Image (tube, rainbow, N blue to C red; front, side, top):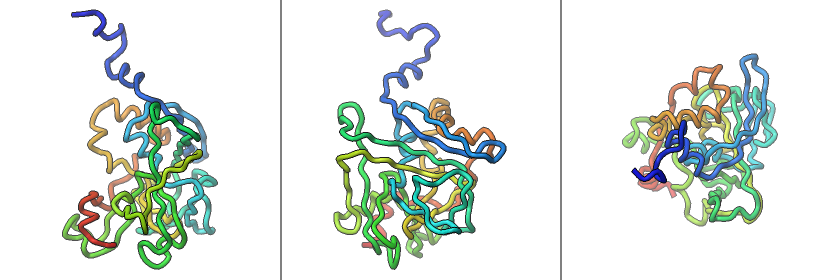
Length: 249
């Protein structure tokens, strides 16, 4: 075999692949084993799963808490937030990523954001315009979901609602920061009055069946070493085509 195609000594092919992939900087905050918040910045190979894990809420999103609204960028681990499918829940983890101004498409693709107009999903849902990241999923409550997923509510991808009127795809020219939060269980947090899915790996389960994917995801969630995962999936997901078949708009 031509030596140019051999793996370097003590280096697995998967490690070489990760080294060649573009890397991103992720800001993380989590509750440690003593219940105190910790912070860190980690550079990880960018993959769809890793990038999606922090791509739900744009900077400036207001989250509902028992003490009032708080911007996602001001949130700290340990804070209680209101949920749409249960009682208030404690924030266990916060992840974010900043896309700097002028990110070159040749080095890293800038993911789009979606502006959701006030009242798109009903009265005060959202209460005022909301900007969501590309991997966000909103909670739908309608009997029409039952024939598709067996229950009257489901998480639907925000991308399914893009219509250039109620939900508009935007790509900011300047710096943009996106966030996601994880609670002890699978929940719907309330962002600007609209129920939006908290992080749960169930949406990307098919990408996490190999050790490399699990290893990278573990680096993104330091709190998992002291916690029992993210809890069971409480609400099923609607696919892009299933969501559109509901004909909500």
